[in-house]
Image (cartoon, rainbow, N blue to C red):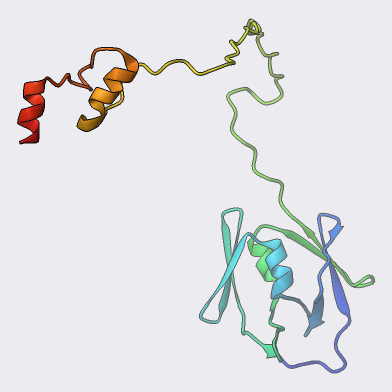
Length: 187
């Protein structure tokens, strides 16, 4: 593309009656409307570059148009002819030269398959009896904690002191030591 000096007046793009708010607007060059890639990105689901072709996908349809990347400083000013691209995606286009407006009409979405015949009304939903849950009182535990139910292992030298303090016979965790067992243990 050859740059035009002075630049061509901008073209306003509307989609289904809504004006697209873009920073870089579409322009007419050589009798065609060219749109920047930032505007194309707003009209499609996905887009990428393959070699020198721009590939766009929207609603399962794919289109390819030639595109050469151009930069002015750090800005991407690449643009593509918008009409063949949108027609390939199934859109209807109407350019109004008096107002410099490109009106894009997207096709209606495909209907979703349903088990009911078209035009029939859906029956009201059946009411299902569901009893309300009855609130139950929760027990409130306050005060000291409940006693421990398992014994604590005690080292062998403190078992006699523990038995003297508790006044109870030693459990399997605190085996009773006899004098013979103590003397055998110490030797």
